[in-house]
Image 1 (cartoon, rainbow, N blue to C red):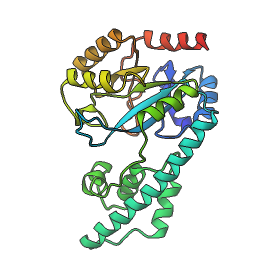
Image 2: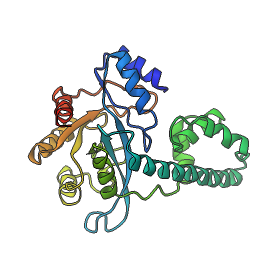
Image 3: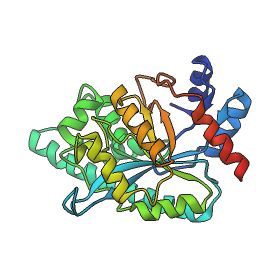
Length: 279
């Protein structure tokens, strides 16, 4: 969705507060802030990092990917901009390597390989940072798969290439130096990048956060489109016991549009109002 489409949809759905958290990119933030003002919406700068996390006890030293949300930061911060530029270049190279591996799979299946013209068409479809969803959409458009899920199941998981090695400590320093806060995103998402990869036990999940993350984060995402009531309650209690900020959101990516479908309590925005007054 374009920024204009997002804000039209937000107004249509009577959304009061919005944050766009693109992965590894803040290029839309200035325009989003202006559009929010035009629409009469409260806007909070947003960004989502994919972090490489490992722990000798819980992951046996094996690296897993986790998502963290940066909010309320200065999008003009030069150090943050430089790091995101580095990550973007890496993501572009990674996407091209994934396409090479997909072509190898196509060759073994008797499917015509993607040409330079195809690759250029995929790149031109990117509004932000080049990633696997753009490749998936193009495979659907070409009629090679029926939908994006099939693209992931059949090719993109098997042909994956490791992501940019970015640690929590570095992300925390960058965000805090830019005046922002760092939130652990959807910690118990059963279908996504979360601690479910390590354990389904909510108690063990929060034990991991206590032992390995508390020094670097400001809060945790309690309300999420794939968090059930038990998960939300557990993380609310955990956040309260450690004086952490609590956030929530739909995590809407593409269709189906689920913006505004997660009931986030009013006090969440009050936390951000308090942060504003402290600045």
